[in-house]
Picture 1: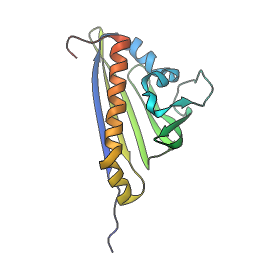
Picture 2: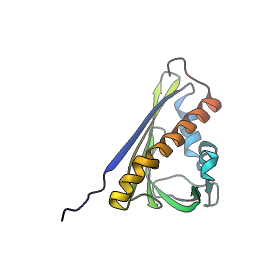
Picture 3: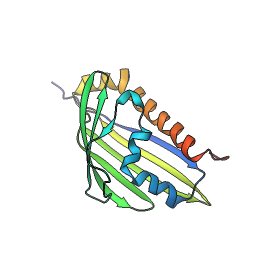
Length: 160
């Protein structure tokens, strides 16, 4: 009998923001802004008392809903390199793996923000089916919403 190995998926996004790198990094370094960037359908709430001192090793607890299913999620800031990048890893939550790298590159007086999320679902073939039927589209919807909010807050770049 062959064993099914869960596939690691990658979501990548890039956005040119017409604001300087230190300002953009500072916005994303403030965990309180996560609720603003997350679509309402997730009913996302930060449970860790604010403000959160962002640094490598910081833990952030969230509560959200995936449809009717309530989910508790904990991430650890795994790297912290202001104003260039930081990453977070899920310690507890709906994924078998979640590693999100946030990068901020100065482009003149603008900032190129890049996100790379490597994720893997639990439950073998059932997780693979869930990815095809729902998870991939839900993540695209979340990051599309995030892009729109960033444009509303910071404006759009003529080159972006």
